[in-house]
Length: 506
Ligand code: G6P
Image (cartoon, rainbow, N blue to C red):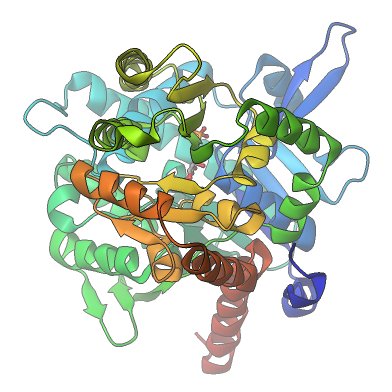
């Protein structure tokens, strides 16, 4: 399907780093450790785009990866305070787990990181009703988010002091404050933060309590470089620093002067581990799923989406658009099927539970109204099954990626990378992937159900030559980038800035 010769060579990170050690810090680590019935510790790959990308990076840089202990087994492993070689059968990097007491963790993750910060960064509050900041929110900020960031910072500083001039790479919205606390403990490491999700405009950011938004911006400005998925999100960050913090911005250099330090604001669009994804897509397990899928959906055009069941993914408006398509073009009935392969996520949070119930109710309603004895319009799967999702991505005619806002959206890249059907990508104009894939997908306003339904119709009736041309362009674009190149550009900027500072004696 894709000739190996065209794939990009992996950049040589070891040479670039010249023995400089890398420490990665993220909330979720590369694997989930549990104890099986025989009492042995087993591990399962962690989910989400961040884990996928950082796994490739850790392997290539032989990093130390610091993450939170989440299960009881992990907490007891964290208490032993040692490094765990990973993957177990062929250790390429080290994992250190941080034991964050359960009450702190709960406030940090379930009150602040996900319901509050995630919602702000994806613009998904229903502002007439939510949010309302109460004593509980302020307590969760101080005793949860701030406290957890301090614990991550202490662990990172401790690892850092064992190494010579390390680079600390902080990941995402869970760790907006960590750089500031690391700097209080050690001045040696180079501090870099990457935000995997969107960065909102100042007006939306100012929904956050004054103290919270100030601490976030000051925390971010304790880094040497901060990275974002797109130039637009980097621009929003600069605007926030200017208007919410009163910091001085150099728009030409895209840097912020803060407390006599210059902080650089850069863009690094994340990508997938192309080679590894291909290996997985050709594995026996995926082939088994594929055979089943093709048998069950013979002669059917397939609209596919695969996402975490997250409100930011805009799953319900996607079904509403499909509903319009079937009502307006009943000739599609019995000839098209919508496979929604969703993963339950963050079920401890009320908004997520409610959203899941709404998804299930919408699917039931559409299936009842349009379905027939031998045809069900929507197949909904609510289970974390990555391999089944990959098998389905190989066969979509239409891939629906319509998030409200999204940092990048890796499904928009994984799909075209493995699809064998010259399928068409319908892409939200608010996904970070737009700048790379916008020319070849069909772009929609994610709130416009009419437009999304029309995009589905256009994709399903598109002449084959146009499908082929669009799919080839998408594939080529995705092949050009990969997660190692993503990290390569970051490390190049880090090493370059360090050299420049050394020469200038800063
Ligand atoms: C997705 C997002 C990441 C985020 C992660 C957290 O992968 O793209 O930006 O860090 O979710 O998910 P979790 O399951 O750990 O809450």
